[in-house]
Every structure is written in structure tokens, then in C-alpha cells.
Amino acid sequence: MIIDPSFRRYMEEAIGSENALVAFSAFEEPASVAVRLNPFKGEAGPEGRQVPWSRYGRILAERPVFTLDPLFHAGAYYVQDSSSMFVGHAFRALLKDVARPVGRPFRVLDLCAAPGGKTTDLAASLREAFGDGFMLVSNEVMKARVGILADNVALWGDQNVTVVSDDPSAFAALPGFFDMIVADVPCSGEGMFRKDEEALRQWSEDNVALCEARQRRILADVWPALAQGGVMVYSTCTFNKKENDGNVRWMAEELGAEFLMHEDVVPGMPGVLKTELGYSLVPGHVEGEGQYCSAVRKTSEVEFRQVRAKGQKPSRPGKEAPLPSGVDRLLKTECVIRMKGETVTAVPKNIATDVAMVEQVLHVTAAGCAVGIVKGKNLVPDADLALSLMLADDAFPSVEVDRQTALAYLHRDNVAFPEAPLGYLLVRYQGLPLGFVKNIGNRCNSLHPQSRRIRMDIR
Image (cartoon, rainbow, N blue to C red; front, side):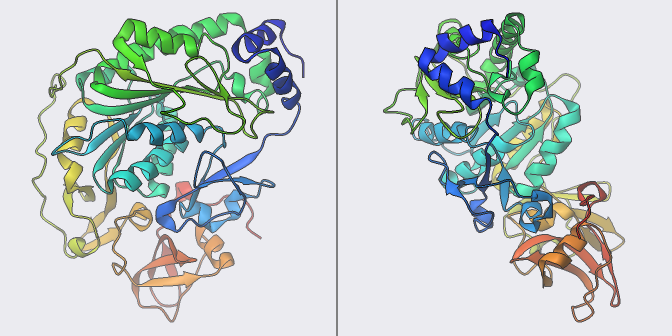
């Protein structure tokens, strides 16, 4: 691999000459493979060595074909680089230093969220810390990527995640709304060079400067949405000081914040390099790819007030739509049921008011859980309901299938359960729901979405 002299200098300035030599050597090695288990779906998934900074992270000996693992489609785990999981480690460590709100859920924004690795990590951490008492807003500005994010959130199954698609500037309409913001901002991508040699060839000092300016614009735009005393977790997948420590210092000096990334607040981990204001994860020193992480606490004053976007009508949180027959028994979480046309969705009652405020000013792609579509007097269950943590255990009759039948279902092949009850069945693999079929006796009609079906050969 040919290393640009300017990039070599940037690396040496950021992490030191000896550390940089180790990294350059590691750039020639293959990337590692890791997954993070879903603790609310039984911690099922591939076996591997634990990631030091993630209780549920596993580093695998080799890369399996994830598409051919039904547990992957059940949301039992998420494929995520082990270095990227360090952001979740910092987030969990900082949670204890943020004031708990009274009378409302704890609010977090994942600003640059697609494809969903950090969102699913944050959701699991928040659920462990707060139970149902949190709201996580997961944002992706690129319209082409927000669908992938929404799909991955649906597979993970946490109904307290709201997916939106807006420019960071739009969040200024929610001043002081969020207790914490995670900003894994677009960067020059130096930490991904081992996976993408084209990124290495396109690297330039001009691009670093462009990224630095764009990152500052993003941070300044979203800053009003962070509560006073709230915490901003800042991360990139790059190494240089300009995009990392430099931007953290700029936040403190220009936006009003204090540094938080001290080892007594966020403990260091084996192989992770301490920078002046954060931590740097560098291939060769850790098994994963490149990642930088730091954090600040907002000291500048802000007062939350609800701002309604021009031309939008206020929503009416808490007013429940008439329930289609039987919907109330499908959910084990108390929800506000909403209908738009024939589509039924359920939003957890304890975050319904907060979701309504967000809907007034942002473009919401998904909130709560899609329950189904009303056809006459019947409800056709939605695929997302099968994957949701709030689906009641006895909501539908279920059928346990083996791996080959599970793959056939996910491939949308014909499956039959002649001995199972007629009507809607929940298909399970190793106890975890995969989705629904309508059993009509000698065959089944699949409710698995075409957009999620396995397209490769499953034999």
C-alpha cells in the first residue's frame, strides 16, 4: 500500500511516529470481523472473543455468510466493527454524569446514524439504563440511506427509537430538547483505508480541510438542540488532529463546553491510544479499524421551548384512535394507537408526547412500531411487529422451524405448516420471531417483505 507523504505526516502528528509505523504495517493486513449481540433478544449469535469495551461485542475468527444465518434476520445481533463499538463504551460511561430528567423520558439524538450500528448500540444501552424511560431519535440526512437505517432499527426491534431524515440545522427548532447527542460525523475516512483502498487514493490535505469545515458546520447547527449541561459525544473514523482534537477544542472555545474525556470519566482500554482530548483506535494497536472518540459538556445557556415549524398544525399526542378489534392484546407495552388510512402504528405512551413534538418540526420516517393494515374487520400484521420487543408473547400462535425452513421463509419460498392453526402464524427460529405467514392449510401466504427477502442461493 502506497502511503501519501502528507498522510504519513498527519498520522505521525496525531499518534506519534512509532505508533504510526505500527498502523502503516497493519494497513496491509485484512480487516477483522465483529458483531454485537442484542441483549433483549437472548444474546444469540456467532461465537467469538469479547470486545474489551463492549459487553456484547464479539470478534469472530472468520467472516461467516451472515445472510444465511436466520438469527441475523431476527435482529439477534448487528455486524459492527469493534473499534466503532468504542463510541458506545464512551456513551455508557458518560450516562452517569448527565442529570436525569423528571417527568419525561431521557432524550438522545444519534445525528449521523446510517446504517444503524451506533443507534442499535445506544438503544440497548439506554434500555438497560432506563427501561422504557428513554427516547432515541436516529437521524440520517441522506434520503438514499434512511431506508436502510429504518430497516436495521426495525430488525433490532426497539420501539423507543424514532427515525428521522433532516439536515442538522433542522434540530435548532428543538432548542435544549436533547440530554445527549452522538455525532459520528462524515470525515476523510482515514480509519477505513484498510477496507477501502480507493479512499486512500482519494485522500488529500484539501479534503481534510473540507471535512473539518463541514464538521464544524454540523456541530454548530445542531448545538442549540443540546440542553445546557447536556453531553455531546463526538466521533470520526479518521486519525488527524484537525478533524479530531482540533474540532473538540473548537467546540469548547466557540460553542461553549468543557472537556470530558478524562480517564477517570471514560476509562481507557487495552490498545486504545489517548490523545490530548479523546481516544484514538488505530489498526495494529487494536483489531478493528480506525475510530476517534471524544466528548464535551455544554456550558452555554439554552432554554427548551417547543417550536412549531411554519405551516404545520400541532399534533394531538395522547388521543388514541379507535382500536381495531384485538389490537390491544397484541402489545405488552402501553401504547398510543394511531391510524393513517388503513395503517395502524403504536407509539409507547410514555414517549408519545415527545414523538409528537418531534413530528411537528422534523421529517419522521418511522416512530414506534408498525402494527399492521386494517382489511375489513381484520388486522393484517406488519412484519415489523414480529420483530418488535413490545409484541406480546401470546399475541399469535407460533411455529418453530429449523434452519433450512427459516431460510426458505426468508427467501420467500413456499412453506407449509399443515398441523398448525389456520390464520396468522408467527414463524420462530431458536425461539426468536422472524415474521408472519397466513396459514391456509396446505400452504401459507408469506408476509415477509419483498424488500427484505434473501436474494442469494440458500442451498
